[in-house]
Length: 467
Length: 117
Image (tube, rainbow over the protein chains, first blue to last red):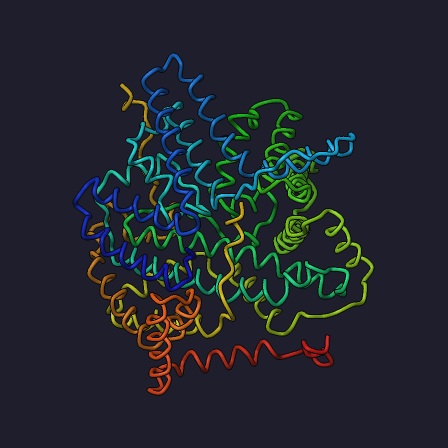
């Protein structure tokens, strides 16, 4: 079930009404949200619900064991994290591992390839696995109380953030699940603005850029000229931002309409003046998850020797890249960001004090282009494809031009929203809450009609569903 | 014992994009309740969309598999789409669709149209 579809619209209206009818019914409201979330998830594939439930059970059991047997807490924690990683690893890397093993066997002279299971990657498996890991770690570190099974299952399954985040910390959501929900007029208005803005970004900007520019150019880069390749690279930078931030904007808005507050997940990332700044603005819930549970908890963070800190930073980003899938291009994307972050850290240490700071616009421009370079590797399916794109751009190669005034205008709009007021959503929400509901309904209807007319064809799944 | 050490505090105020500056939990006066207002917006919006966006209903229905159970639904959705068109209710979406098609078809000076590339 995709957010920008009629079926989800009907689903959400029913859940919204039932949620508020049950607002003082305690656990019955959680049961409703849980059943609704399973229906939402089962719409993709009913088997996924079993996996989700199994994952919740494992983490709930581990959480109980950790809190009840503090002497063995470390053991149970390691076991739970390993179980979570095995689930994630099996679904994400089994196909690659089996294909590689078979290829190796054939090269070694083995003629009969081993039978390979056709494993379907469950949508959003990474996100609920990360939720599970953060729960057991937080219980072990006493950052979160152990949850009841229904609370943890709701935390991990809650449909607005189930398939593509934001990753909500147990300590942030569990207390909200234990309280009766609350909805002010300002929250309702701001949520509607987030949902509407998300719809525009996904259904109009990201969809059209994908269909009319990025997908055809990246499918056959050798046929396209340097101008097309440059514009398509910028186009992908805008597409992935609009696609992913649209999902989380809608997730935050939908959760808020059900009385639950989610954290901010994007903060005008292409305004960043360094890669470090970029990662404080891009997919904030994942980057802070990687910082807390990988960079600090596993690799030791920055309170160690400089070389070890740099290695921790680099490895965190490489593993962050590998998390996206078993592809060399993802590893290179992660390594590029890791190397960039290390270079920035070292530069801050050796930079002569007398050297004037680069103008902000130059730092932003430079950071954006480093990030876009990374996106080329991220989007390309093969390493040689990415290098061919870069080589053709460097050679100013001639070829087809499919970028049109429309696609360039969409890129410009996608970039422009980074340089508007950073609290524009809040400000619009504050204006809307002063209007009567009929006026807001009329504005919302008009917006949806515009989106319906502007979007061409169907709605593609969100990019981050595949991770 | 456990409670004394926990940090189970919920999301800090201001960390969510829906946190408006004058609606903090301890705001005085307390912010106006929004449940009835939100119900009003959603219910009115749904009715308006049912009237003016028959495209969405028809698109959804036409993607359903053709079975004896779905045939009446598909038929009803398409009839409603035709009726709405006859009543002029589809004009907004139709006009935006035409404008969007024209914008998509626009080319740079000298650029080949899509069918000649």
